[in-house]
Image 1 (cartoon, rainbow, N blue to C red):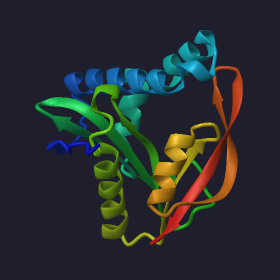
Image 2 (image 1 turned 120 degrees about the vertical axis):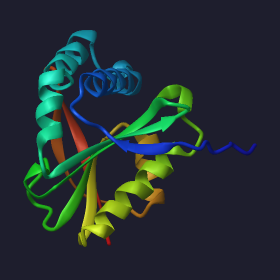
Image 3 (image 1 turned 60 degrees about the horizontal axis):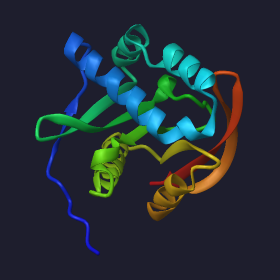
Length: 178
């Protein structure tokens, strides 16, 4: 069965009140949809409240070594992508690299190849910045995401701890040489 690909467009997220509200909503929605079955409601809510609130997002958007994009379809955010470089990277061992910190597609837009559109956009940014590699962290139990990244040539190069509330989880670090 063939899936269709939708047409949309990228738009950099700004710190306007409307963008902040949309970004917070899509972040909370996609993280919850992806990981709610993996941890307690208390841990999930603690993580969301600590990391996905407008003051934190406003600081992230002000960082000159980071950029966040909406991918919009028919005027509504279908997905978002956050990339970091230089000091904004969450791990320091990747020199001259671009980090994909967040790449999420809302459930109703999944299976429409939007993940691939986001990935190609991140790869373009890395190439435009003349980065040597691109990397990301992925939850050890998120096999679908791991398969997606392997399709794009990412290989496991390490791991780190990612804490959701009080739950210390293992994320695999994946990288791709450019």
